[in-house]
Each structure stands twice: as structure tokens, then as C-alpha cells.
Length: 406
Image 1 (tube, helix red, strand yellow):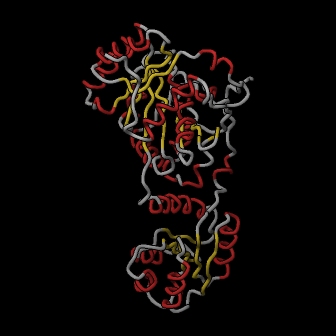
Image 2: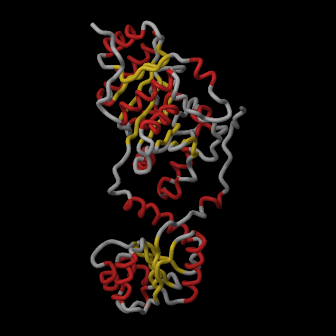
Image 3: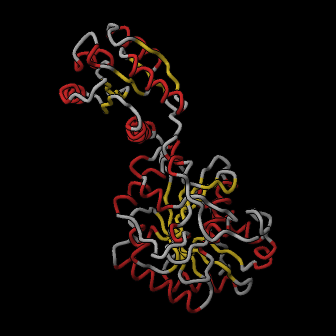
């Protein structure tokens, strides 16, 4: 199978036509406003749960809000039965929901100031397009943060290779499938944030249309609906966020600003049970900025002198910079069938920490995998080793690697 060497760009208009999977109430009088907003709502697939004239008594609107529980209201405050602040107090009953977008035929500063002071989140005037799309992007992010505020967040784990050739990228990709195998309801994202030599899309046999750089740029407007445009589903329960370095460019991809990294990771843990971040090889400025936002770090090493030397160097650097050792897990990959126990015990003594997982040097399995699609080799030594690691992650307290009896 031949993989494309570049990502196909998403047409500019595609990001604008997002679905608004919300319940919306209209409290409008002006026919022009009503027509334009209804057209935008219908185009985006939102559900209009009620419609009132702006002059309708506030208690009637309040009853509809209590009954239908809309996510947001479009309100023409210039024609409501009470001043904006009093009207909102009646309708919201002292709460901060639903979100309110104030609308007016003209962009009059006095009307805008009054509505925003009263508690409206946005202000729109004719023509409502394209401003309504930008406003709804911001509203979507706000609704998403409220909706997920009480949801149990997932975990972010970095996967770092001690040196090239240790198989960290393959481990991250196949471990995602193993996590879903152990807990079928699990949702996992593999975020390829290797800015040097990314490889997750090759392991997954995927051809993404977008990449992580675009997600970082759009972080202010991310929602669960919008997010589908940035990831590539690769198997049941597993998504891929492709590396920016996959894109052919005359200039190398640069890591995003720290606030964008923090914001994206904070969003991701509300969408996935596990986020496995491929950090590439060695410690470098690009992956160090990512390390500040992960909970656990899997260092993938191999039973050879150079890999173990590099592992020790990484551990020393991390500890000297304040990265707690109890957040680090050593995974021994491509372990020889013999002497397995010798390697595990020697590594544990060398690093003064336990080996979290051991994967065999199962070259036959890797060579026989399909080249045109991704599959998880669960009934092989390699697959069973991954399932053991996934079980320990999903079910803390499970036994670790087998050790030779004293």
C-alpha cells in the first residue's frame, strides 16, 4: 500500500458549516431578524423548541424555558415587555442558563451596551451572516465547557522513545486498540505530536485530511461537534490526530504556544478516556512543552546498550527538571525470549524502578500484518503483551511483568 505524503486540505467553507446540536428559543419581533436567524438555524440543523414575539410577557417565556430547557435564546430586547436586566431575571430565575444572544436590526451602541450589561453573551444585528457563525463558534465552546464540567475527565499519557527504533509509535497505536479491547466502551485518541519523524498515520494505514496544527489554531472554538473535522477514525473507539510534520512544507512545523497546548489537552480529556501522545524520540524543546500537560509518561526502551543508556539520560533529565518519577512508566519493547528475566531484573536495578510492561520481540507478527488496513493482532505474543499492559492501565492493581522466582 502506498500512503500519500501530504494531507489534503479542508475547503475553507467546510469549517463554517458546523452542526449546532442545541435547542434554541426565539423571542423576536422584526421579520427581517426572524427570517435570517431561522434560515441559519435550519441550515445548521439546530432544533427550534419555541418561538415568541418579543412583546410576549416574560412569565410566558419563563414557563417555556422551564419546560423545554433550551441551550440558548435569541432575544430582541428593544421590544421586550421589560428592560433587558429585569426580563432576563424573570426568564432565567436567577440562573446563568440559557445563554442569551441579543439581536437588533441595527448595531446601535446603546442597545448593545444595555444587552451585554444585562447578561447577554453576544450581540447581533442585520445582516446576521456571517457574524452569526462566528458567534455560534464561541457559544459552542462555552456550551461544551458547561456540558462537560461534571463529566469525569480522561487521562493524558505521553509515549516517548528512548532512541529511534524502540517502537514507541507502534506501541502507542496498538496500545490504543488494546485499551478498547480491555474496556470496549473506552474512547482513545492517538495524538501524533512528533515534530521530527511522525509515523502514526503509517501504522494506522490512514490518510488524514487535517492535522494537529489546525486543531491548535482552532482551539478557541472547539466543541464535540467541531472536533469531528480534526480527527481521523481508525478503528472502533480509536481516533488519530495527525502530526503537523506530516504536511510537506518549505518550513518545518513549529510547536504551538503553551496556552494552546494546555487548552487543547483540557478539551481532549473531556472527549476521550485516554489520550496517548506520541512525543517522538529523546527530550527536545518540542516535546518538553507537551510534557507539562501530561499525567503519565511511558518511556519505551529496548534491551540494547544504547537504548538503556539513553533511557538513563532521559530519566536523569526529567528528575533534574522536577518531573516526578512516580509519573514515569518503563516499557521494555522487543524483548528477547531469553534471557527475559535477566533483562527485566537488570533494568529495574539500573533505574531503581519497576518495569511496567514487557513486549516480546515478535517480528513475525508485525511482518504479517495487513498493509491496506489497521488491525490489532490480539491473538499473538505481541498482542497479548499489549493487552496485559492495557489491563494494568485500565484496572490498576493488576499484576506486573512475571519475575523469576528467587
